[in-house]
Image (cartoon, rainbow, N blue to C red):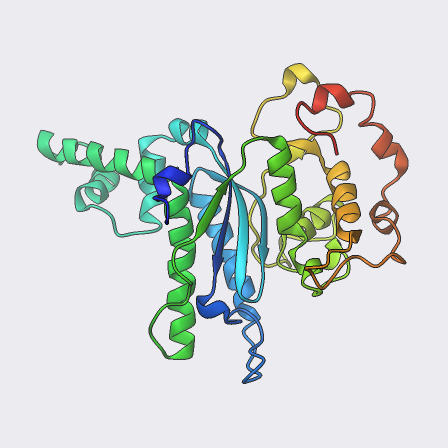
Length: 307
């Protein structure tokens, strides 16, 4: 029996969730159709850009993402505190980037309270509260992504009908270990599907974006739009300075963990990082001194899991 979305997403338990959507009938609508030979790989970049667009509007952080040929994954953090800190003006401006919105809200944005009656101002307040709740909603976040991609793809194909196989699926990530496991699962998708041999070669994934950012391989002027990712904890942080939103791991540690996990052979998956490939720190020219800087404060940095 399918659970109601409100039963699957409970922010009193955890702000972290893993969400995924699959193309209808598992068709490769974002990859290469093996029957017709027609390629739709450009839609992967559509999805990456749409995730980035949604992240720029909603009070929801992206921890990890991976866009595949017939599905995509996102690991998300709902930022309740950030949403509460948004001003009414920011809430209205953000929501009107998505939809036409209530006409009194548009009037309020343009002229302020001066031209509104008390009843109209009460209507504005009502809708601003609704918009604020939606800007903190994973369901609306996924809807903004999926509806746009569905319409754009159908327009390109000159057809109508479903693009996605029902509603998106969500899983609660109840602790740091679950978050780490989920992020690794998401980032390793192209390697497990035998589409890439290393994390840095895994296109349309957060791990590639993080590695490029760490090694300064990318340029905002040259690179296509990508989601702004929730950052890792700084290696030289002081415990009294630490406060969310950060992923409670060090980036170098995470890179090593992904490299190790990607080498594990799984009977149910086609791909893995080849044994002959050098360790990731060598490939990225990261010195061991940088890694050792994280070790003295190991116990203070990790509360539930050590990678």
